[in-house]
Image (cartoon, rainbow, N blue to C red; front, side, top):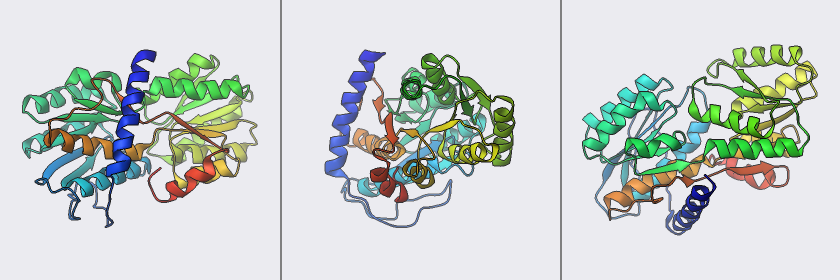
Length: 331
């Protein structure tokens, strides 16, 4: 695991350098989900291609706005017609992949949070000659399904990074709050924390219902007075957790994964200790860019290993620098 992590991290650094040299995005409004973009002229003079980006985005989760912004900026640069869609249900997400196959797109970028539901249709896409890259979730399964690249973070490693930070701070009994049961990446994050802090307890909440999230966490903190930290696995859920901790009078610290402007401000203000940032803008950008590179030169990135975009720890020492980019929707 450590050896492949180093190789993938090196690949990610090399690719980030290429990104810095080549990036040139243009403005314009973003389309609604399942609609088509690409009206802005890109800098590439290559023939226009169509790429489908299909995620497991749940309604109201701002994380996916950042992934999508990165994909749209790459599409504008590369003269790509980007078709975005998403569904949190694995079966319906698989149907969206099938629609992309039927439309004979030139490439598919897909998240694999529910790999069992996606395996058959991803294999069908590759059999049809459509290159597939994976992003954000499913790093362990992506290459087995035939994906040529994976962009994201290895969630177990990210969880262990968070666990190391909690252990450093003397935390013994954190609550790890999972907003989507069965999501392989979220489960791995909590497992990584538990590997470093054995007293970790998992709490399942319904991420699509913020009222349920807050009521469930409130009840948990009231019944668990020795809980000394709450880890949210997404920015909106961590922001909600801060409110619950304040309202219940709990002494628990609050930590997070991922980022949005409100969370970045809470880190600056000292209400959240840290977040593990997987840099989702890069996940969207590199997924689209890699499919364009594949179409125009046959390039394949990562050498069969994940290209890691995280984990990157953001805390009070560097949150102010990150806040501006978060406000721009790229963190």
